[in-house]
Image 1 (cartoon, rainbow, N blue to C red):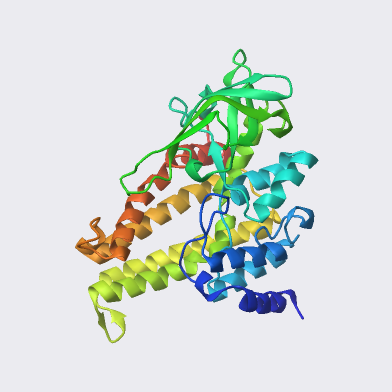
Image 2: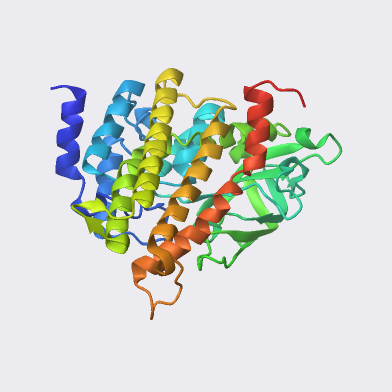
Length: 387
């Protein structure tokens, strides 16, 4: 039996029906509940190594080759199987540890990420260090076998649910700003860490203020060398911006179908077609753009032989952010006044969720590196244009 046939059969037998099609993907960890089916799907997938398919088996992966990985994703998309777990552990710190971590760090952290046992958050941005991240001030003082950390981070996505954080800290204030930064990992569940969620216009609070007051990070969890964390930090951002893991969600295939169904509900249909020809054309265009984006990501996976590309990942970040905003704007235009409701007494739960998604997506062109930053990276490091 071929690998594809084997995967197809395994998915059909092991992916619960409720974990197929559009829906939430759990982030794992110890602080967020999952449904029984989500937990079952996570357990089955992690036992098979399919939560992190390309990772070595010793760290919880399946050690799939790039062609096998793509076949797995295609078969997941065919039945609408959602990823069993997502988050910064799988998308960001995991791949970074595979490249920069010590054997001890890999052995302690990667299997837990693969099993969805730990929710990770990112300690990068600070109130005075956003786009100019290298000007960060959070300090880490050498205390023998550990660092003592004091300072503040902001826009710490998911910090209120996180078990661990990967964090940029200043370990030498007397050298050029890029050269005095270190990259450390430490537990969020300690007395020196305080998290305050930030209420957003969308009604959600995924971003947080995070304060460190003599928090402790073991030197065993220093990634890379002291004062050389900027190199590790940049590589992690390339993993984040590559969007490779997003291929596993299968969302792009449903995009056109969802919008088509939405349009028929709110705009009506004639002979099975959307009555509003302008909106129908816009939906078709968006679907084509989304599919082209997915296929471009696939091509890059094939050409890079499974490794994350370099500065070109900023192209994915830039285009993906604009595509997400385009989709929610199209949803709102289709739904009209039904798409701008926040009152559950007047609007349906789905309508309120759409409004909140639309508002939340506005941040996509800022979060994880603004569109302007991505354009600068593309101009200088991809196209080689002068400053």
